[in-house]
Length: 525
Image (spheres, rainbow, N blue to C red):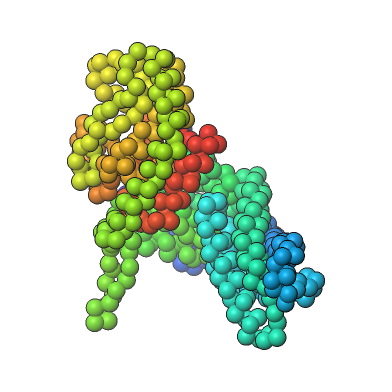
């Protein structure tokens, strides 16, 4: 049977005096579901859905078509500007050296933008670039757009050279077109994304979602959805065995046996199953009930068992075997990451040295005590090291022992409050990175006393120490820092460790710099 989730706190729920449906009633509902008809106080419901699965709503079609139009407009604008730049850069001196270089009118080069447009629409469609139902981070959008645009340009040149043998184009023109396509397409798609996100936040083109599971995992999903309206999810209700009326102001609509009726009655578009501890048989049963109603199904996995591992399928004499990658960062990857750390920290120390000296002087003038604050942290292989930071608290801040930093911490100095909020206090850790004690990107290090506590409470917590601690990390750029859930941080840290790539490190560094410049660092205090 389905396990009862953890009982919610009373401050957000109301007791439900009505009794839960009996096992006989649940069985009857399940039997009725097999026949496509469901019992309810309001009558009997047929299993017919007004909208077939996979058919986009009108607003979603508008989003996709408008995005395709934006892509085409950006492509033609890029080629037109590339033609103008090519004309402007043909200096008289260059034309004397190469008199055969003649740039004709733009109409003579129409074969390139026409072919590029067709290739782009085909390639972007095949890569699901127009099925942007959920928000994609701007950096992810930039990387994917640059990669696919480069491939489009190569295919365009190949096709034009193959079928139009007499067509002559200038390499300068093509180079400009390639660069401008990447830049203009990225800007156009970013602006379109903002418009789509704002529309979805207002309920335009959103999906009606049924959440199955009201335990800790269900609460986490519900909080994320409510905190990010641009996702376009509208949680219309929860399926749970709890004896409460609502969770976080979202009503509980019934139990598992009621799923088919709820989906039909409330015109549900997607179902999110948040029962990571359910058995395989229970999960299959729930998915089967949802599949009868032809809705999208999303399942939250056991985060510590599945989320942080890359799973591949191999074969042994025709027998499929699942292979779970244990360590991503090894061999040449370690050398590559260390090289980036060494170069990045050296450049950072040289460029920022005047600023670092200014901050050191201001700290000395602001309050008595040393400029730097050093204390023990756990790093690679659980080995301790002395982390270096600008002092941001009073000299006697830890007179009664180490304490967890909280928002508006009274121990901070006047200058310390600012440099902590702006993460300036972390900059001396470039020295730790340069000497190999830390990395630019990695799990944030904790004190040994906290590590000993967390390892007893959180599964796989010590796996965070398979890599060097970082100045920033995947958890940090997602707002999981300061006084936030250690369990959530661990999930993100494990995902980073087992999915490491140089591109991911660059992405995290860019996001960190962007948050620092825009002042959007979450939980930085």
